Length: 198
Image (cartoon, rainbow, N blue to C red; front, side, top):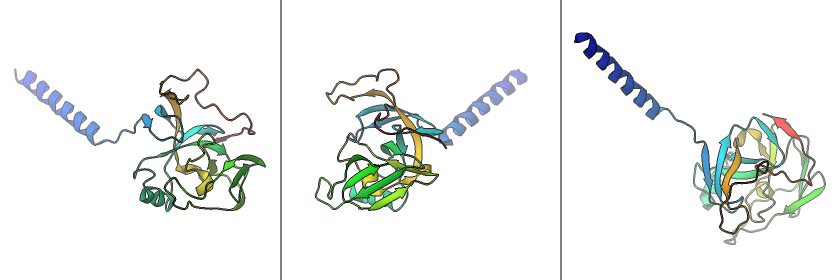
């Protein structure tokens, strides 16, 4: 009887320690819901950003002072990642001349002078050859996306995850669908593609 009580006590104690351990251990989320218009609204799976390629969708924690600017303006809440597409990797020449953004001489899009509320947006000018450890992020499909058009290249270490669409409204018609197999990252075919290990 004592042996059975002791076994029950040890099992209960072990279970309690396990529950407490799990409750205080931070388990990173594996799914994220995007509600912004920068990329299709919907559900995405988070994966480690071990190997990045042009066209990949990524979650980004912006560095300071950019993070403070974005939250102060109310673009996103503190701690919420930006979801962007990889437009250029190390060794690529990225330019902003006036409002025109180019990557290796190809026009990717235009920057705006003001946001939708009429507030001026950050401006960088000139050309940069991306060094190792740098990435340029831009959502070409969303003309009003707050991306590299305004904050220039970022450290690749600001990328916290590669994101893969699971169930999105990619067509913008209010119908959520699972993407076709192989369409998870859909890189832009007009850009010279390269990959990088992280």
